[in-house]
Length: 115
Length: 178
Length: 162
Image (cartoon, rainbow over all chains, first blue to last red; front, side, top):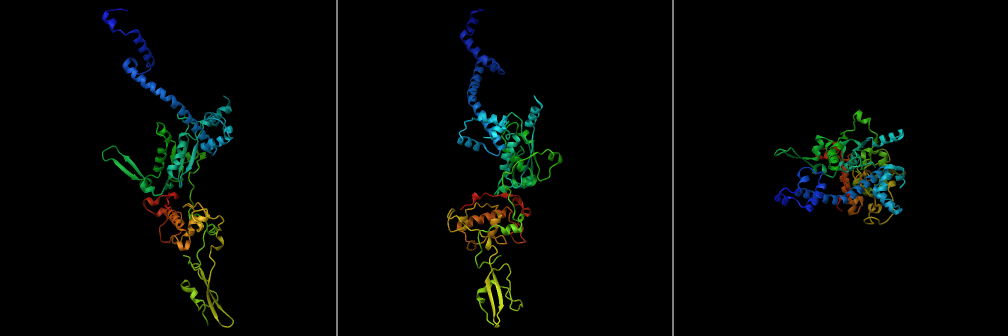
């Protein structure tokens, strides 16, 4: 849509347009000018992507922590402790991971108590 | 869902009421245990967003024991917010004013600092003596083990027990008993 | 009338009463010597101070293991017990009735154990666990104390420096 020569020069180039569109798609759920203004949006997007990268590790760490808390809670019910369980399982060569143990502690307490 | 499963679910998510006798217990060491019960970390179904904490009733909080000379060394700070509003209270002074405060503050400190900390603290009931109101006493269904052995005074033993206890040494021949 | 063994009786006997009609004097429980006053058929009177058996003589525990602790000469080291300040039944054996720790020449401990046990006796007394071993006029009952001494406290034995 050519209106005037001046406006035509001011209009964004197609490449530039698609680049911005990619960014705006990712910032669509933000609030305020960080949704619509490119220079502000790109700053917040970079920050957000850095958070995402970091939290990929944190998510795993949180899950491990939660399983440990659940297993130690299950052990405390039986009068034992998490360290005793882990050491005993290593000695008996039982290769169950924390996730399985936590699930056993919740859903099958009798199976868990046999460990 | 079958009736038994439904009841099992109610039982899983119901709140227990635990009794803890604080006699001769260190408030800071017992707080580590009590905080687990208040936040729900004593259950395998624990999740940070899962509100599954239990009630804890602490009795005999007047009889707590602090290590060494901590009664005169431990200081509690408070600031009113106004200029010159700072005040420092020694532990024994605080315990004289309110015998439940040392225990309450110890447990508050032992819990993680987050938005549900104060909600969890509401489930803590501390009594300075062994008297519990009837409506709370009726709820209690469990007991938390003491974290430290309760010492027995020498007056608590009978004379036979003291006399018959094995002796480690004999007096010298010329010693006069006093 | 011959007096024998009078020098042995020494200052430990204060209840020597020759005018008493009974033939045997039993010394009070505080004294470890017993004074006997016998009259022989030939008219001689013998007053003797004999050692009384100690009240705890047949309750002494014998040590079997050797040289497991700090030294091998002292019985507490040989026993190798983990004594806490709450073990008042053991600690009260080292204490006089007025609450003082017995000296080392009486207890026969090594220096290290004497220090340890003396400190633990102090700890037990501060915690009010042995409040009945003291003179009747003293206020060692924790509830009668003032300020920070009023409340319960416990001690850690690892803080004993020796």
